[in-house]
Length: 228
Image (tube, rainbow, N blue to C red; front, side):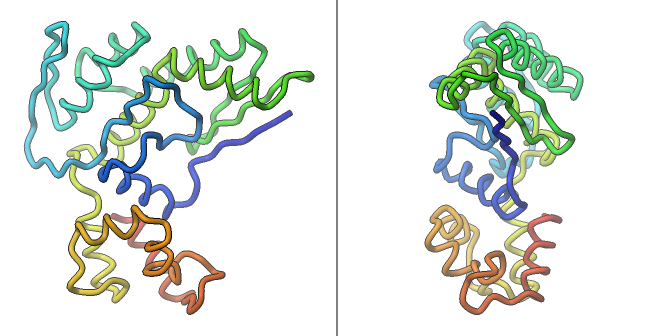
């Protein structure tokens, strides 16, 4: 039995990031996390580096200091704490953590692989139900802090200065006539954090089945999502 989890299209990814800032989501990655998942918020609109101190006295610095400190304090896996000690997550370090996650699942018969885009595929052995397989993946995810570290790693790479991604995105939408000039960043976040409002306001730019769908403007909308 196979189940493939991917990150979804660009609109979904950017909307999820904005939702995270509005505290409406706890997970951004494709796999299910456990009860310890805290989902470090992306884009806190900070313009300067900061510092934060963990419960054990470890000091973190940089644009993501606060998020790193939260992830560190909530970490279950000692490897997570080792990786975060220097306030960075290199690709090599994240790959090592990913291998720990995969090894954990493999020990219970579940094969976990990742593609170049960050999508995750899980393959369950014959005789294992999907619910049991999902439970294995979720527990290994939790035990290895995988979701929290995945969110943090992705955010630090895509938004190194931890800036609010909604600001340039909304500017682009306004520039191309895709959003009202009077719309504020707070208005935008409230809209995309509500699935119904999002479809009502922006659906014609990302949903081909929506009334008034405009293919030309949909392309501009996608460009704003991609380049912001």
